[in-house]
Structure formats: C-alpha cells, structure tokens
Length: 118
Image (tube, rainbow, N blue to C red):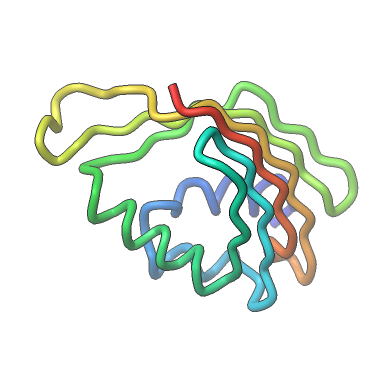
C-alpha cells in the first residue's frame, strides 16, 4: 500500500481495536493538540483509544476534505462524525482535525494532530 492508502485504512479501522494494529508501528508516537489540551499517545494508547471509541459510540465516520502524500509523509484534514449509542439515528459532528503522519516500514510511526471539538 502507498502511504496515503495506509493512512486511509487506519482511519477506516479507527473504531476497531484489533484492525487498527495492522497500521500502527510498535514505536508509534503521536503529539495531539486539542481543545481539551495537549496529549502524547503511543501504540498501546491508540489501541486503548480505539477500544474506548468503540465502547462510547455506535459509529464513527470521517469525512476527509484534503489528503496530500509526499514521500513517507501524509497530511490529512477531516471531520469526525459520530452516532452515540443512546441516539444511533442522529449523526453529529464530533471534531474537525488536521494530521501529519510519518510512516516507517509502511506503518504509522509519528503523528502530529490538531483537533477542535465542534
């Protein structure tokens, strides 16, 4: 897969704690700035994040507006949409995000994410 295809597959598997492991390097490191503050995430924590997301939402969908690949770096701009388990019929915007991904061994290795809750 190309770096862009790896990033797209990762986002497709974001709510799947098992599937996500196919796209994450064992030394993954993410720096994430959000409206809730700054966090750092490693490969174990991203799997926990996927598990929590699956537990909290009936579905998660990303609408990607921009994706640019240059070598082993991919930049992506997207909006997260979710359906809650309490109300699985209404989709709401969760956040707007921008991420830069560096790949190593055809896996996500470094991530730099900025997000804003809607």
